[in-house]
Length: 114
Length: 112
Image (tube, rainbow over all chains, first blue to last red; front, top):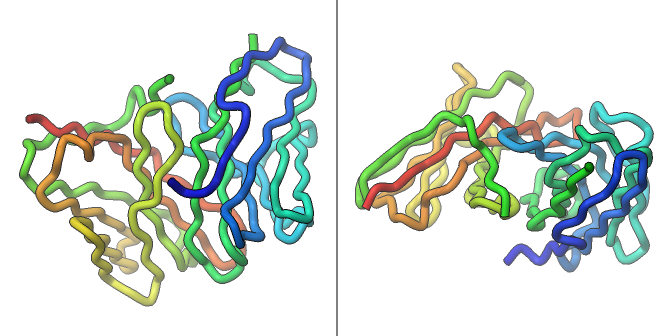
């Protein structure tokens, strides 16, 4: 049990639709990162939020966006869904990621785009 | 749930044997390294981490070895159990980036 909770666990969307995924970080953690894991691959970094500000971004288009709230929970929004967006979306939290503290992952949200 | 790592390198060991999973990283500036275990349909589970100022770190039944000269990381699991069957990922991070960079993963199969 990592203390990182994600919702929903599974969802199916149609191409072109929009989706919002949610993450509640471990108590005391102020840094949240989102990763995309396609089938058969390792997780790929999407972006990170530190104290409600985006703090780094991977090679993902602008239709992937996010928010971090004052309680450090976070959302990942994906607009104009494409079939290739089908993946496991992982949220990871840590305390003050700048100093290399342990990073804990949630169980993920499985997104299927049809 | 769906399984990940359908076409990953596979290490098959007998129950009770020791397992060694290897990982190469590419960024010589990386200063922090983590091993994760991922079971089918679940998120990555933290196993052990090590910082670049160390060569070895031990946990419960696990040991991580870091060789910065050849940019190589290994995870040793003692007395491997059926519950250790999963996909194992190494990840590294360099001081200038916020992201973890994950390796491609190794599937560990423990034969009873």
